[in-house]
Image (cartoon, rainbow, N blue to C red; front, side, top):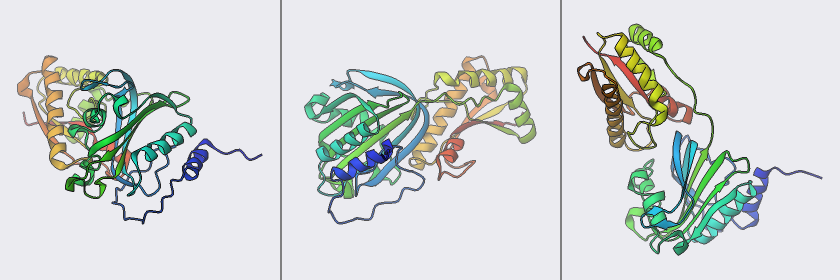
Length: 333
């Protein structure tokens, strides 16, 4: 007897459930460097309009309906976050798209934690999608406004939070029908799919201690720090950043004549202006933490470079991970 893998079965389910629509093929926009999420087949004819591989984050997974303007229950998870935003082909309903994705996820071994459709999600006007899943500050901008408004929700919201059999992966599946609007471009009136996958793993240990920082600055005039972590999409230092802040404090305390620029860097996901602003705010957050630790403000200066000084190609996730960093750069005495 032939044994079929779960991944193959999931893809087979998609085919058997009629994902192969007869709608005329359209040319999809190109987003280089982003593969489909593991074990998640793509709805036939759907186009990728937005994507992000955000690295290690703390993520609050909605596992209850909206109560007011917030989910009534959240499940905190940690891991590597990946997001994908697809626009379904013309004629595909949100209900059909959701059912097929749900069936595929179940076939791949995921178990639902919470599911809802329409009013059962907590409101009559798709607040889960508009306020939590895809608010203004979470919009993807790979293709500019084409990505930003690829999920421009009208109604018909469907949601499922699920966990893999081994508990290492959590997924948030959201599908809704888009508004009829020029802003939405080709996505107007179509169903859109927003997927978030958090894969749990131990936080990578990439600690550079004070001695290594001193050597890097002495040898090259700067040192890149990959372990200064921030809450997702913000300039708020996470708890995991504390060891790096402690080592920077040790460096500056042991070298009282040293002055440094604290320089923030991002990858190229999102528009240049937003990234520049975020990198500046993150550098300022590090500076504020060092001042709070007792380092004189006069020895520090914050600057943001956004995506303008990469260490590697932004075409791949490993490259983008290298480019998201904080650097200490020696200043004139």
